[in-house]
Image (cartoon, rainbow, N blue to C red; front, side, top):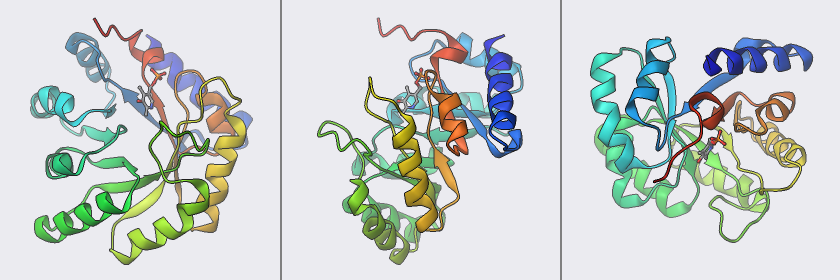
Length: 217
Ligand SMILES: *Cc1c(COP(=O)(O)O)cnc(C)c1O
């Protein structure tokens, strides 16, 4: 099945890049996929999944989580502050911390709830106006601000501009992580996860290559 092929490709690229395969965590991106396809991947033993909308994730994961133990859920899409409370209850990792207002909201809820998902700061490496994320030149200050708020920031995430060589974007994300002492790098999708692994990704987010094309209907 495609899941096994992707795992094998990640491992092969890791070895080729002088890395250990277990350094790279594969997130199966299940957004928009029919439940039967998601269930097949759960049945195959995979437990790490990504969704890009809180509402959509709430519609399927509470049920899947009661039927399959050990699920680890990742939010990889933009988070509105009015959905932050629900997101904090459902997700284990949020990859899209991208602005001071959201940081303040998460910090307040963390105090109130006594717990917080692991967090990654999204960086808009291509400085694209339509894309979320802090600008590369603002990243150090924003990371420091999140740390002042005691938020559990573990790493960085990026989505390179479509149609460009992603390698320099991944390399830049790695530079920002290193100089800020962050260990996790969420980068690489179906089309470019091998490049991302070569550039140091610790999370790759792969959807269509595992599940098949998304049918938005
Ligand atoms: C949809 C999505 C992915 C997966 O995309 P594929 O090309 O299907 O692998 C990865 N990251 C983010 C942020 C996404 O929204």
